[in-house]
Image 1 (cartoon, rainbow, N blue to C red):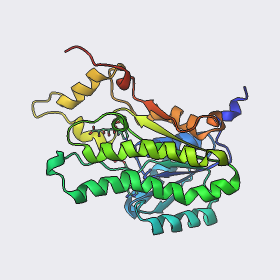
Image 2: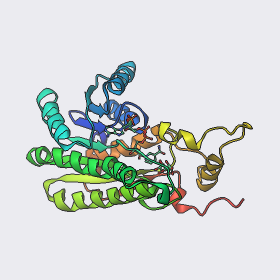
Image 3: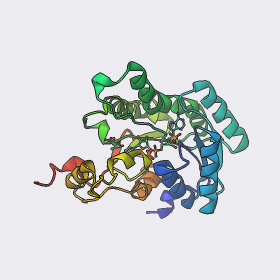
Length: 265
Ligand code: NAP
Ligand code: GCO
């Protein structure tokens, strides 16, 4: 086997919401594999923070301000990327939010906001890049799903509905564009230590670990939280030619949570 199949040399990768967190780690790995990095975030401050962080790693990234829920802005951004950098070869739909609110206390507006960012935006961004991928004769779309693409839990109804829908959007893009040599797969991270999960890991007033922190460690065979770096290898694989016959698959990178009933208390 030619190991260059894992190389991303000469490819342009757009990772949404990648100023920090999981998106940043994936972009860092793509740069190491030879890709040109394009990212966007919701405001100038975050984009500048991201550009500085990429520069610190020796990565000359292209950063843009864009709200991925705004289809007009996304279409304009893709045209700008194609003009300034080139047509996108790899799209990672990473930008996401979560609102942890008991369902009967959640407003329809709050529910819609989570669906807008976590499900509608991946549709909008994928729709924007697929035509050029068809012209190029290849493309990779990677949707960042979740444990909540398979499981529910209290207070995350909107997020679970969005991530469950994102799993099926992944399979539908596979079905509709596989013939154009576009592979659309998902990565389902387990519980990863990022700002998004920081509230679930906060030390208690008495200095003890957060009950949810203890719960997740007991539910994970690896007996630890994941790190954004744990996602880098799987993300490179799904973006590379090594996965050209993998399509519509959700690759769970969860330390074994989905396989495990949990440690007996
Ligand atoms: P994070 O730390 O909250 O980062 C999410 C990024 O997306 C932030 O930069 C955020 O900007 C950006 N963003 C939010 N709304 C946006 C919009 N409308 N337009 C453009 N950018 C936007 O999250 P993370 O933990 O790195 O998670 C990244 C992805 O992985 C998300 O899709 C999340 O659902 C998923 N995920 C996370 C975990 C985990 O345990 N951390 C596990 C499974 C899946 P702001 O800072 O302005 O919000
Ligand atoms: C939560 C967490 C999870 C993680 C992730 C798990 O409140 O349960 O935020 O949803 O973000 O999605 O895969």
